[in-house]
Figure 1 (cartoon, helix red, strand yellow):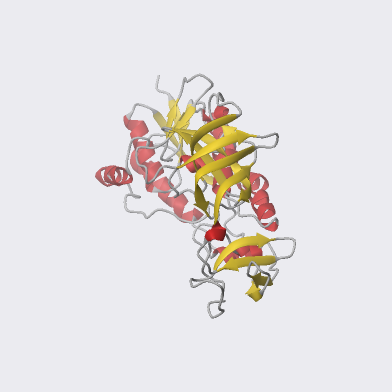
Figure 2 (cartoon, rainbow, N blue to C red):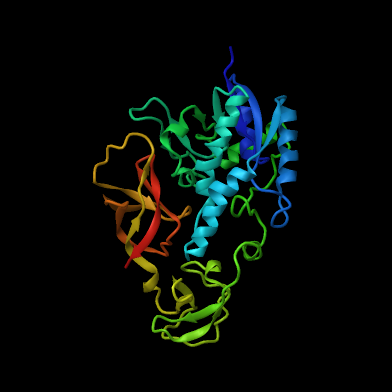
Length: 359
């Protein structure tokens, strides 16, 4: 008897091809579209169009397609934390939490009600089942599309029975398959932006939930250079939107954000050589290790603090409250609230939330 796999259909080309590959592999595929945000709450949303595309793809493939609304769960498990982090002056990454709290949580539970033996998504990553200590998360063949960074917080047990059909494919190969099969999403462009905000104006969206609290823009000596619109709108390394271009400073370059001071509501900037942006170490929360945790209190690995960053050599030392990470070379714009993600070879070990930065 064929095994049933419930595929998370996003309305994009990646999940479309994932479903096609599973059907070709002999599975009984079922499409499931998640609505994680109320469309009339916070402005325009692409959910309706994505749902139509998901239905069109499933119709083309001859498989059933269902829709489920996880907006309540999303708000409680992801969005409330997102707002709390911004209130604290940090920069969160809700896409990471969405994977752990929604896609591999309520989604997986709902899929079982539909008779799922497995669940699958269109993520670009690999998985190894049957390894000692549980499933292991592996990097994708397409290094430019690898999405293990966004899966670093998923727990080992959540990956049991999960399939990633795109593990060995490049993005160009995925589009070629979609075109060859005549899938309606073959030429649909990739979505960008935060998972629930999409391509809406981020500043305008955030204003619906957090009040503006203007404050001073200062240099490292405390000299007032201008006024910011609210600390939540800025992140270390940011150059645009400061509106202090005509103010002279000690350096010759453009002004950029180096720090945020929630206690005084000050945004710290510099136009020097950029040394203030670089750090050799960071402190993070408890590490979520995916698979067997046999790494001890201190281990060497590679790590990155941003999705598009290349992996950097690092040494991790566990502490009573998390871990300290020492990099071989100084890293630019390490941002509290974001994630540091660890790798050994082709394996993604997992990750942790960055709490503070060392200089």
